[in-house]
Amino acid sequence: MRNFVVIVAAVLAASTSLAQTIPGAITLTPYGSGSFGGTFEDEESELSVKLEDSSALGLILNYQNSANTQYEFIYSQLSTDTNVSGAILSDINMQYLQAGGTYQFDGNKVLPFISATLGGTRVDVDEDGYGSDTFFGFSIGGGFQIAPSNRLGLRLEARAFGTLVRSGSSIFCVSAPGNGTAGCVITVAGDVLWQVQTMAGFVFRF
Image (cartoon, rainbow, N blue to C red):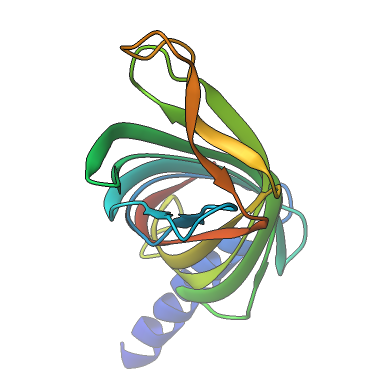
């Protein structure tokens, strides 16, 4: 009886491992996260615009390319506020849409992984008159995929999103403010805007 239990446990562990690494498998991971950091520096003054910490939602699609590698597509959206010289800009929406891949280290029910993606970042102010801006972006991250069953799992990850902001770019621009004069809040010094997300989501395997 004891030998039978050991054999069954080994088969279940092997099948779980196979389901996570078989080429052609597709996984879909809706997730929630906390988002931290993000500061724009003005090119012409000492003014800095810091984004408030906030929550974010996203979706990750993976295609298993080999036993240890996956293609990855990620979409993330967050809404935050910022304080500019005592004035609050609310409902600043940031959207990340990127593609890349992951490398999974060997494991059975727990698979450590690292990931990297490239794509775009869209910054938009949800107030009348303000425009939107799109920049080149990338991300790097790492974490664990936990698989209690063949079809359902849990993904825990920390990921840093970098947005390359061109020097001299004007952001948070309004076309028709209250006094009728167009203008922009800040002219950005060329740099990388960093934001970190700590993520948790359910993994659905197909």
